[in-house]
Image (cartoon, rainbow, N blue to C red; front, side, top):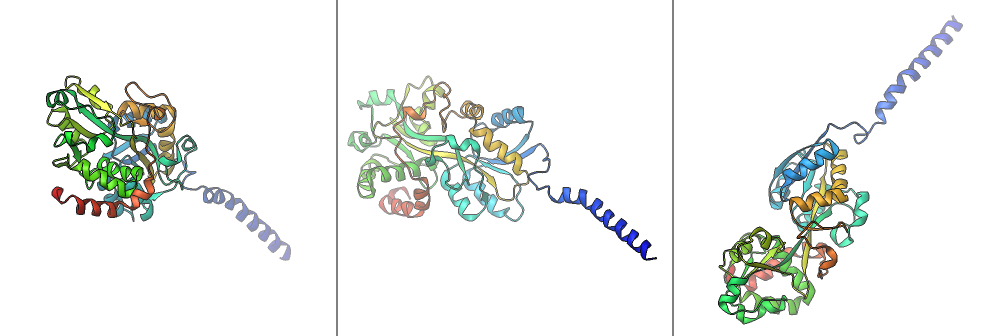
Length: 343
C-alpha cells in the first residue's frame, strides 16, 4: 500500500508539472506579446488622414479606423472614455492639448526608436507625445492688394506694427486657434513679456477683427479683402491659389512653429499596432507620406517634398511648448484684458 501511495504521488506530481507547462506559457504572454488583430483605431486632427491610413496599411497590413475631429473634441472624448477607451491613437492637433492630456493621464508614454531623430523641442521629454511635423506660422501676402494700396511687402514681425498696415492685417482668435495662440506666446517668448505685449499692442491696432479659425486669414488674403494674413503653413497658399498673386513671407526676425504630435491612448486595445504607427510616422517613408498628405515641415532631416521648406531653411524662434502650454490661461486672460474690442 505504501509503495502504491508513493507511485500515485509521483504520478500526480508529474501530472501537475506537465499541466503547468502550457499554463505557464499562457501566463507569460503579455497583452503586447499576443498576436494583435490587424486593426488600429485613431482620433485624427490632421490633413488628408485617409491617404496616410492607406499608405500605412499598404506598408504594414494594419487597417486603420479613423474619426476626424478637432483637438478640443479629441481631448473631451478621451476624458469621457477614460474608463473604457474606444481608440488607440491620437494623431495630430495642438501640442498644448497633448501636454494637458499627459497631465490628465489619458495618453501613455512610448519612446519610438525613431524619436531620436526629432529635436527635443518637438517631443515630450518623457515620451508621452512626439511631434511628427511642424506647423509653421508666417505671412500670406496678397501682392495685388499691396500694390493697389501702395504698401510695402512686410519682411519681419516688427513690420506689422507699422501704421501703414492699419486695417490690412487679418489674424485669428488665440482662444480658438492654435496658430494665433502660438503667434502671441511665441512673440512674448522672443521679445520678453514686457516688450512683447508692447509690440502686440501696436500689431493688433492694425487688425480690425479676428477670424475664428487659423485658416480664416488665408481666405481673407486670398480673396483680396486684406493685404496680409497671419497664417499656418503659408508656403502652401501660393501653390494652392495660383491665380490670386499671393506670396509667402517667413519673417526674417524669426519663424514661429509648433509640433503636431502623435500619442498612444491610455488603455489602448491595440498597443502594439499603435507603436508601429508612431514608428512609421517618424520613419523616412512616413515623413514623406505625411508631407504629401499635408505639406508641413518635417521634424527629421528627410528631404522635403517640393514646395515645403526644411528645418534648416527656417530661422525658428525657440519656443517652449511646455511653458506656454501651461501659461495658456494666463496669457489668454491678459489678451482679453488688453484687447476687449475682440470679445
